Length: 373
Image (tube, rainbow, N blue to C red; front, side, top):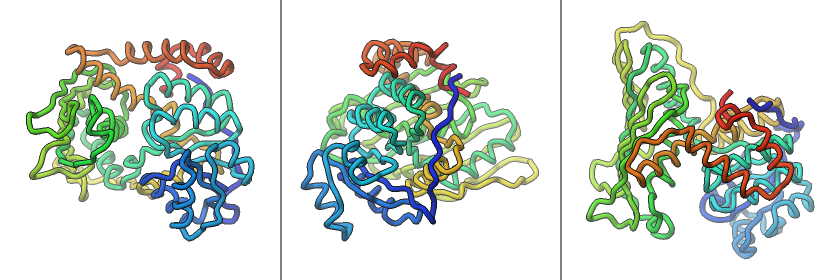
């Protein structure tokens, strides 16, 4: 296992962390508002390749004079920024985050870590080389109801099956409707990551079928059913569709856990329900929520040196579940996650151009050993 420590920064309400946000699109604007309203951060600049978009975003915040630029490291240097929030498109996650980490800037990034698992592994190595924190905002992990559900699972004894049903009918337009596997690649990672959190287990194998109903407005497969074998023997089953009008589920999906002592149910919007003959126990709840919670945890981790949920090594296995499911859907066969990890590792070693990052990758005894505590 790699040694996970990061540089501590003295920051907090009395000394807000100076931040530049990279990306002025719709999600970037949500982050701009979140960074601006937090008492623990100070927004000092906006980065976007479209400088006009960055200026519009600054003006809409009521700060038309806020510095803007097209290069995160350069703007950070010019503004005295201490950290970067990366809200670029997935294809830009690897270059933007690598440059920031190597410039001595911790990064809080939007999911996924990168557009491929190979580049995600390279970013884990870049965090090791730089000694800076790279945390992924897997924001749904911080849902207090999800925390309560995890507490219920611990009361059920051994878990046999955990299931998610996800049925929505959004009409996004744009790139999602042109993707080969829009549901698996763009959305399912939320549920896969939550399943790892709930079970306290990582994936071993995946079998997935993806398909596109005849009425779908997506070019690629907008529906999928996947079964994951998890470490410890539990099975996680995901069944979803992004072209399913009527009786739609929550954006969190609907969940059921079946254990030796009973079951737990969650509709994704309201408090979960325990159906079991057990004595009620105190269930810890998350004091955080959504992206504001992720930002708060990021600052807290920089201040204390603690390793947060969503740290790049920990989060990589959620992206591995996505790539394993896609590979299974493409090939029609059961896929071992270690094979997916090994293929991604070989690609990372082949493609990584930064010599120190490549050397760190080459020093890993095994991929799973580098990622899993």
